[in-house]
Length: 338
Ligand SMILES: [Zn+2]
Image 1 (cartoon, rainbow, N blue to C red):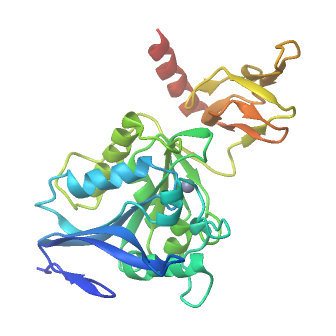
Image 2 (cartoon, protein in one colour):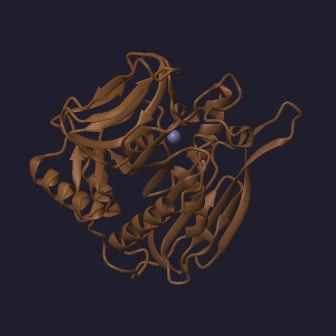
């Protein structure tokens, strides 16, 4: 039988059966003080995969922080088979400023992976995180929310052409999986490229703890742990229906063609029919309204929350569903409203 292995990072180690809370230096401030990220490593007594759970690569995306903290500090992990590397706040400068980007030249930490030690400040930070805490892992989940002012239904983003990533994405058990390779520099993309299957979980809005979404996300983590036998928990979850959105599905970010104040008529996760009004753009006098209609029947994966737009600003993210799934969603949503 294989035995559990010691987890090592530059500057320390965590033996099987041990847990460690540490603050790891990834940069320095203008005053020369360390910029340190919180890290919790839990090494189970039993052998198993090494998994990272990360959040707040964008500093104002908070829901995932709570997901990662609850797994690390509230779950019973005494029987864990494998190692968890928990990174609840990766973008510490952005988190302190409560903004998406690193305050230094507004760099996007989540376009800076895998990073480089001799490059920009963002890439140096990314490298410290990637080399020490991502590279030793077998797979990982990175938690995000929608960009400020918008909200998403919980969904997984994954490169479904990679079998190992597809297994992870399906194990998470969300209704919606958006299939894409992802941009260069994104944590899930770069980790996957070096053989660490990684998915992004998107949920809700920035600047909030949204309890319902956090609970849903935690169930997804439990389902993944079940699939990979990290914990003997309940079975892998089946969400009732699932759609994998790829190039075959019609999908669009509907953008405002007029500036105005937006009256949104649907919530995230709603099914809207072709021609149905999604929202109304109004002026201050409410006398020149512009109706925005669904160009095709689909699911509102993301919608505007902050109800103001310039022409060109996104209003909602609409994705087409295959007919079989559409009928299930229709039934579910009719039952909910009755
Ligand atoms: Zn994000």
